[in-house]
Amino acid sequence: MSAPELRPVLPHDVTAVRDIYAHHVLHGTGTFEVEPPDEDEMSRRIAAVTSHRLPFLGAVHDEDVLGFAYAGQYRPRPAYRFTVEDSVYLRPDSIGQGLGVALLAAVLSRCEELGLRQVIAVVGDSANLASIRTHERCGFAGVGTFRAVGWKFGRWLDTVLMQRELGAGAPDPPY
Image (cartoon, rainbow, N blue to C red; front, side, top):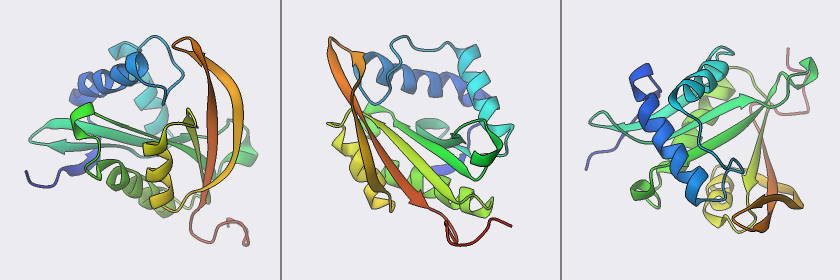
């Protein structure tokens, strides 16, 4: 198979994006949602990201969406405007092929072009080593763990916080 194209998610990709995310909601601990959003809600979420000119990218092969990644607003207060939070989700049959690293690297590159300075990863479940390793491969470092903050599948789950500087990072002002 040829390498997938990494491109912005398009309106006709929403069903595939929803399906990929729904799988992770129903079967995984990378997200703490317990009910998958419907297509309308997923469309709203994509629009919320892209309305801030932030990247929401899909990995696509022959118009088949294999995964997606995006950088969303970290927090709504103005002081956080140079910081984003990333998310990466892959179709189950696309895991383990380097696609998560490729998608995340593309999102980080776009964020750097936008002049952003910090990216936060909130990894659901401290046992989610695939996500932790993906972030490490893209230059993230662990900055802490919130213990037992989520309850899913009848057990407590941690969240692992990771961070990566972009561009000049923290030493210089953003302007």
